[in-house]
Length: 401
Image (cartoon, rainbow, N blue to C red):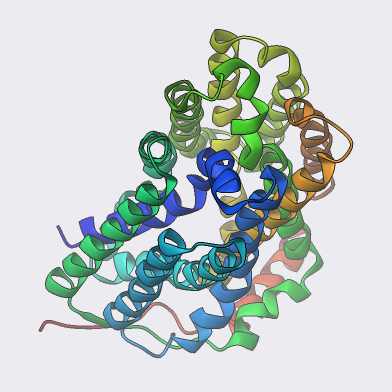
């Protein structure tokens, strides 16, 4: 039961990030801006998240995890309330920045707390349960939020804020104080000095840039077949979310059985092909639902092999490396959202899958370029260097209160 409010917190963060895609047309109309301009709300959120996660993570690393989570959730809830109350594009943009600052702390703090409150032999299961909140947000939170937003997009933001409040109450009541070793900002960025690590992070960034060039605009891209129906769009997004959840579930066993580079390369090649045929598949609702499920499946796989590559490279520095990988995810989301808005000046939204396929193909090529691992001796030396730059092992102190 201790882990349930942590999973709810990551579910709220995931829903808040993903659901905006289904709300863009309504938000654009209400705020008096174009859909590409409204899409920059996704870009700014992702960019703020990417920057704030390591900065604010370092600033709050000395706090016990319960306090850090409650502070982050308070900012997150306030940001969503301000978004729901915003009456102008500028106000909503500022509110999304505030929301992202809180969200940037929640995911990493929830993960480290999950590790700290269970015995060592249950840590993997605890992380899977808590981070499952993010996967569940794509399968459930996204379509439900879009359906609610069909009545009024502001109601969705209020619902997300409510989920954050429930998570905060659960954390305040059910979690003990957990203290972890503090990690400075410089220590968090030290692994980026290693060329191979930097290359892997670039792969992560490019993967999500390709996906999010289209994803925030999928509602307007499919408008010709949904006819503006919130229900039809919800079905499409539900297919994408279930596909993503399935991809996340199967990625672990696949990575255990095969080299992570092979799993990653296969998923990216498949994603590029699926995106390339999107103009054809978006011609009818049935084919679009099948396409969305296949695309979601491809999107759900890459994070797991990427995390596996980084952890295997330097296990002692895994908290730092995984944090940087999360930042790379959101930098990619920000780049993709910006490129998607720019691309609509020269192609129709329904054809955004073509440049998205090109960028995904680039991610495939970069994966091949970073597949060659260093020799054993170099790997050991690199791991030692990373370990020296990382905080102490996850020794922690839990106080029951």
